Length: 298
Image 1 (cartoon, one colour):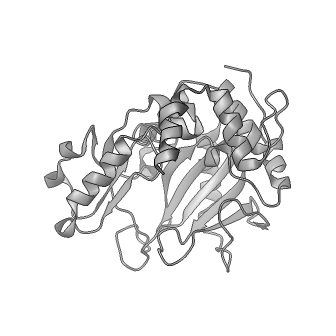
Image 2: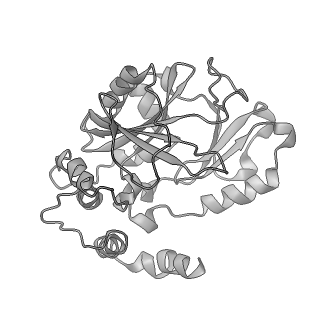
Image 3: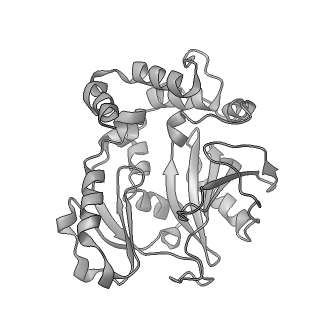
């Protein structure tokens, strides 16, 4: 871990993006990127990192700023309620103004999430150490996802959401199902459903579906569930929302939640897995790639 961090955050910061991407791509997929004629999904994601650098992407990946982007596009009712922030440090958090249950998130990275189910038993010291470590993380350097380069590391609080059929907190279902739509300039093509993510005794499961909710024979990072998830009643509505949020973007992944029949926005991901996650079968890397129309270089 120490050596890895030294390479990424030490000497890595002096390596140009294109060279770093080539080395990382070869490490993960066993080949180099053909930037002159990219064909696969993962190759085209690398091309977009270097040549589609529209300033508005930074606001889309900032988890705090993205709330306004979504509210402007589809309405405030699809945004998980904000409870406080953004704060520059943990010590600025106004815990006395937060309810008994809440979620703390960092704005600039992946995994910087702390869930508080009962403020009376909340371990502030552990949360502070965890979030402080995330605030110090430069999420741009490992994968060269350039929109994160200018996202200011901050913390904010939002409502704790659990699905008990009415959108309120409950012990009936301890995890929300994550619906991730792969979209190509406003056209959703594939839905990834993530399950068992918060169950420490089980491995996270990934299941892919087409827009007719036909299960696709794809694995990409995690195995399929033993029993494929059922089609949500709000599937058509989620497709429409994903389309609106992704229009004008060559490719993106729009993450949504269904909480008691009410849809909430999760996040916008512009570079799924950093563009370094192999598909099985490999042909799907090229099927996804065919759906991306590369724009002019910016």
